[in-house]
Length: 136
Image (cartoon, rainbow, N blue to C red; front, side, top):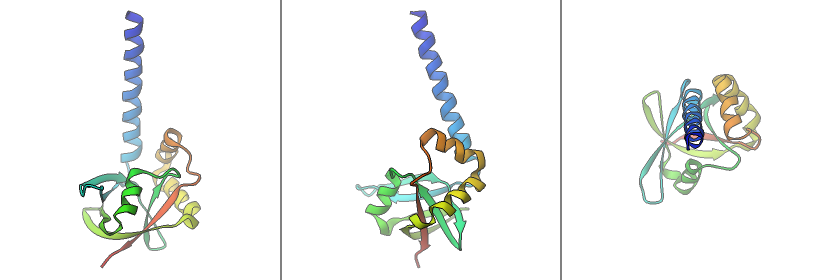
């Protein structure tokens, strides 16, 4: 029984350490808040990385998509972003042609955190850059 408890305890420690390291890696540099609507109309707040390129703001979704990307597609007129305390509405455009540039900018801005998150959740190949265009 003691062996089982030690194994379970060890696994719990590993899970806590992984969660803490993921938080540190992902939240230590600029993080924006994406506000999207789910199908019931509830606002969902998601913390994401952002880079600026050619005068536009870009988010990046994994190649397998994500819940927040699905919500953006399902409710395109309800996309809002909070950056540096300012909230604005946006139109999102998928820009796969910008993948190499956006991935490079993310690596430069988020340094080891980008590599670590990539290690945990999958490579950046096939990731989807999302250009945000402000709405009037």
